[in-house]
Image (cartoon, rainbow, N blue to C red; front, side, top):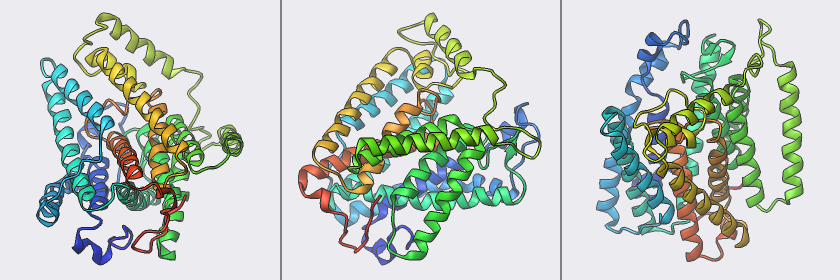
Length: 419
C-alpha cells in the first residue's frame, strides 16, 4: 500500500502522510457497521453481504484513531503551521456549526454525530496545514488524490469480491458494501474520476488503477444510480475543461457518453428481465421534492429541527431541517467555487490533480440537486466533498506561491501525474 500511495520510505520522512489521512478518512466513512439497518428495514429484507465485509465494517471506524497520531507526529517533526484553506473552509465550518446548534434541541443524537464529523474534519485540516507549513500548498491536491486513488483500488476490489460471491444485489440493483444503490453509485462515479485522473510511477500499479477504473464504471451502471452518472459526467467534463481541452471536444465526449448510457438503459436487463434504471414511470424525485417543500412551508426560516425522511435533494433537505441559513451558506459556497473555477481556468491549466478535485467538487454540487449526501454526518460522499473543497482551495494558495505551477507535472519524487 505504501508504494501505491507513492510513499515508500518517504513515510518515515513525513512527506505523504496526508495521503494516508485521506485513505483512512474515506475507509472509515465507507464501511459503517449497519447490520441493525438490515434488521429494521422492510426494504432491506433478504439483502446479504459476505461475513468478511461485516467484519471489516465492525473495525473500519478505528481507522480514524490514526489521524490524531499523524497530527502529533507532524507537529513534533515540523513545528510549523501554515493555513492554506481560506474562505471555502470558513463557509463549510460555519455551516457545520449552524447545523449542530439548530439540531441540538430536537435531535441531539444527530447533532452529536455532526459535531463528531466536524472534529474529524478539523484534525484533517490541521494535518494539511502542517503539510503546507513544510512544503508548497500545491502539494496538497496531489497527496489527496493519491489517497483517494489508493482507497478506490481497495474499495473496488472489495465490491468486486462481493459480486463474485453472488451477493450485493437487491431488487435488481447493486448495493455492494452499502445499503442504498445511490450510495454505491455516487461512490463509484467519484472514484472512477480519480482513478482516471491519477497516474503512478510503476506500470503494475497503473494496471491496477485501470482495472479498478473499469470495475468502478461497471458497478456504477449496475447500481442503477442516475445521480452517480450525473456526478461522474459533470465531474469529468469539468476536469477536462480545466485541463485545457476545447469546450467543443468536452461537449462531444459528453454527448457520446450520454448516447452510450442511453443505449445501456434501453437494453440493460438482468437475468429476470429487470432494468436497473426502470422506475415503473414513477417520478421519485418529484414526490420527494414536493414533500420537502411542504416541510419548508411549515417553518421557512428555522426549519423543523429534525432530519427529514426523504433525501433526494441536499439543498431542500438541509433547508427543511435547519432553516434558510443552510441554502444561503451553500449558495455562497457555490458562488465561491465557481469563482475559483474561473480563476483556475484563466490562470492556465493547473496541475492535473488540482483539476480533478475542482471538477469533482462541481460534479458533487450539481449531483446534490438529486441526492441528499451533502446534508449528512458520516458518509463517504460528505467527506469526499470536504476533501475536494479543501484540496481545491489549497491548490489555489499554491498557485500564488508558484506562477509556474501549471508546468509542475513532474514531482521532486520523480512521479508523473496527469489526467
